[in-house]
Amino acid sequence: MNEEKNYFGELFAGVKSLCIGLKTTMREFFTKKITEQYPENRDTLVMFDRFRGSLVMPHNENNEHKCVGCGLCEMACPNGTINVKSEFYETEDGKKKKRLVKYEYNLGACMFCQLCTRACPHDAITFDQSFENAVFDRSKLVKVLNQEGSKVQEK
Image 1 (spheres, rainbow, N blue to C red):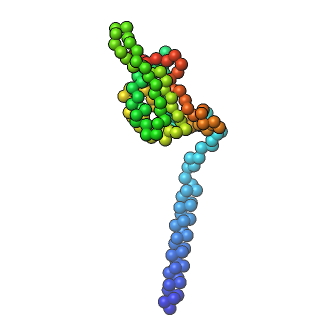
Image 2: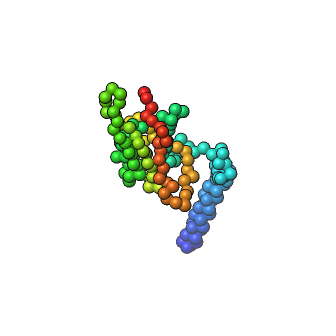
Image 3: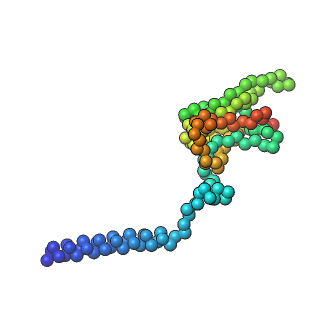
């Protein structure tokens, strides 16, 4: 008698487990699908706000940026993906100032931790929404972020 009770108990437990699984399956079957049809929807695809694409240095219409070449982003980067080259120059009134010469960013070594953007006191660099970064040659992942002939934005 005890074996029959144990047999029916396990049978009921198995049917109960099956019903729970079927309930979950049916609930997911009727929920709205969020699958993106990539690459067909490239034109309309928008990543979420907190997405970290590649690092960019925004320039305004006068080819000016906010980077003063302080190097804090380079120091904050844990694996050395940023290389800031700057130089000192003398202004018209005799003061020495620092200016950015070249801002190199290695996308292939970046771990997208966002420590560089947080360290920047002038908000000169940000992450954009780009995510298609596949290349055959790794040297193409090293990018110069400041544009040719650009200068620091005057306040």
